[in-house]
Length: 112
Image (cartoon, rainbow, N blue to C red; front, side):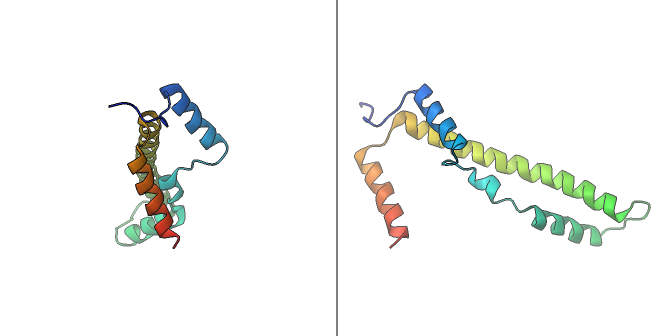
């Protein structure tokens, strides 16, 4: 089967994605959803349930927040990487007319 006419080379796809990120047209949707305040509240609630003898409450909360923060950010970064890889793959393989129509119809139905 022939490549759709809207397919790009791997270099072109990389340039499109980089330009989109640099000019703000492509965002990192999962990382943007990260809520640091919510994470800190979760850590505080977790430590309210623990025995903190010998450790300052502030230090314990900061350590837990840092650990959870890194873990949460790692997960979100992987999700955003999958998003970018999917975008790259779509740019390289292109879309058939049927796929493009389906995407346009789905997007249009959300605004109606």
